[in-house]
Length: 479
Image (cartoon, rainbow, N blue to C red; front, side, top):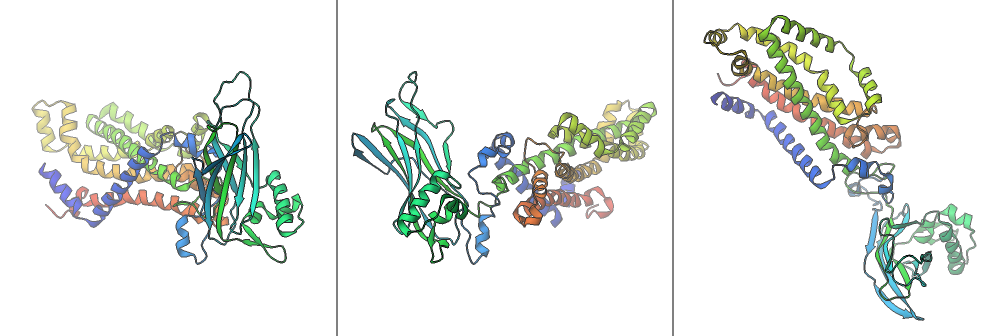
């Protein structure tokens, strides 16, 4: 115990060690937070599901970038309401209003406009409801955006009737023909401007809805309060809309922005923390256990056992890693367990060879001969007497294996050989390079995953450097 305390004191005396432990604590804390907040099948259920990200802005920068810009970029906005803002009777029917407001303060137009309703409930089969969507601009002008008519109900169904409960009804207004025709009427009625459907589509619905018209028919953003309304025309007072959403595509989103599919890079980067930790720690533990164990057995037992282990280790050391990994990836697919298996399989031989040479030196010491003389078993000698002699070196190598494994997985994922069922930092980098993020200037897509890879590797390098005085007697401050 005295040796352990002295070793820890020697390790903790270095500032590099303290920084490494701090970095490791952050890495572990973020990994625990990610595992407890995101589902374990996040990759399959969300990350690689393009439908999930359809209402997210594409290639949006991080929101904090506005701190450094004199002209602020429009943030991504999602408005929602679940209760009617008002209700009134109308010709034996009822009209329910669902209103959401938005203050537009940026000098840009939205990238897209999406309307979404879910859980539409009604009771009368012979009179299904109608939903009309409007927007009232800051200048008081109102535009009809869309009309949604519900189909006739089958006679086999029983009330109440529920629509869009499993999947919301999503209406993308950008490029919609119905809206284009409505905007043609709006421009002619309000501004006496004749612009055909093709002209409206060419200008863009977002510019007309959110724009003021200049003398040369140019559109500039109209600043002020916009009110989006879903008007439910129904026959039963109990009919209603479960949720009404308006999505306005912005130019900045979240802490890390989005990629070309609209995926939130912050969530993908978060999920990379536990993956990096699992790969690094898993590979280092397995490699160290196998390599050190076989090295101790080879060096102490000797004979044919030694020859077999050493020849097998030499053979593995001479097999090229990358071609075999490519072959296995084609056969089994790029799975996490396969990457861990291959990295362990090709890295234990080097440790075995080094540990064997250390065991041969320790084997000739007097305390080992004394243990043999009193009848100690081979297993006891290897565990109780030889392993403590090589343990500091083995633990140091285990720490060094961790950043190697993290960098190796990132490199394999960057080459397209990673696990396609979960996002990793290497895969995010690979997808960014594949889509030209470097040439397009999407720095938020490239720099964060690269920095996180370096951060995780440097963490264990610092810890390994802090352990160097413990392993090397010449660097120790205690004797």
